[in-house]
Image (cartoon, rainbow, N blue to C red; front, side, top):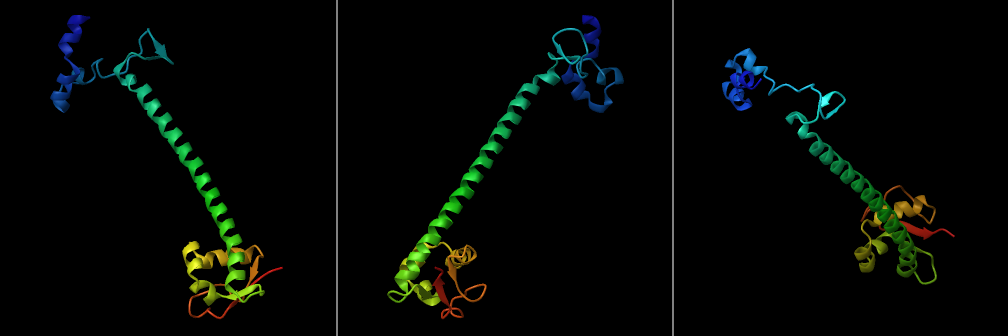
Length: 160
């Protein structure tokens, strides 16, 4: 057996010879998966070099799966955080409309709100917050979208 294997050569010899290697060299037992008796799983010899990388690949796949799950959870947390932020902004909006508008009146114009320094510093997107508050039935105003300049005189009222 040893004499037979030595005449075939090593895997390095076969790689160096490339396509010019004799067919017997290219099909040597060094390059084929072995189906011999011994430590095996499903008929495959687990000691063969081809399967030695298997556990490493499985470990890498498990790490990738764990990381993807971690990112999904953080996405859920992120969305939850955005929802909480939007709720807080809508509650603050109700206070700001009372503060910016005329004393005792539950309304303000879009221009007054937009130009207020505290409002400008607090809201990430005032128009988006107004739209969400309108959809939830917290405020009312005419039109679908508010634009600075064109919509400055639009009255935004609190719903009771």
